[in-house]
Amino acid sequence: MYRDSWQDCLQEWIGSREYAVELLRKAKGWEQCNDETFTYYACVVGNQRLMYRRNTMRTDGRKMFRLSDGLARLMMFDDLESMKHTLSSIQYWRGWVSAERLNQALERYVERME
Image (tube, rainbow, N blue to C red; front, side, top):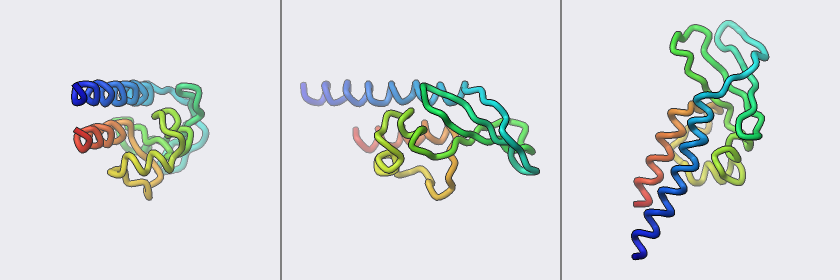
């Protein structure tokens, strides 16, 4: 009984965050500036103001989101520090993370908890 309720809780936890990751993937921003390497965009996702960048030379258009309290709140954490504590596999020193990498970190966390 306890294991089933724990699994249900874990699935609910991951499901709500996977939805947030999907919102990040679909986010459309307004170009703010660019340089020879990156183009920077601002966007609003789930009531949070976020910034992402795209490598100007990459054709796949992968978005890298700025690690911030707003991103952490979108992922349903209190702040960036609590997200760092929970999702420790993200390389926070880089300052940017893709939606795909966030999803992988969530999956790793759930695997550790099971």
